[in-house]
Amino acid sequence: MKTLEATPATTEANKQVVLAYVEAFNRADMAALRRIFADDALVYGVLGWGTMDQVIPVWQELHAAFALHLRVEAIAADGDNVMVRYLEQGQSVGSFRGGPVTGKTYEIVAMEHFVVREGRIERRWGARDSAAMNRQMGLPLG
Image (cartoon, rainbow, N blue to C red):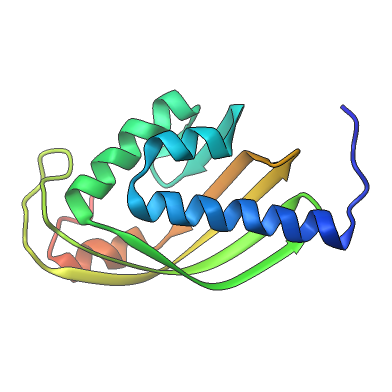
């Protein structure tokens, strides 16, 4: 695989790709997310990992159950690697995998690490405090 030399311009462009991901994710625009991610992208998160075909239904479930929104609080990039710290907010508005609906809100810290190449996201790792999220919404922890 050919590696491109990181320049300030490519580093900034990679940050813009990730910010476009955040905007599309907040809109629950799955078609836009598919365009932003590479065809062979892999996404790793608290519910496991998978391809876009596997992850999109999970993201749809999360949006339907928790009306979630990401607000970028910090973003840093080094070449192909982009890291973001978010304030994630949401509300229990629908059942998630058979769980109760409480109507309660939550606010947690979430972080994601991306690898961006040739203008598309190839890898995404996500971490969030799911226990605090469930506790704030009065949902079971396990």
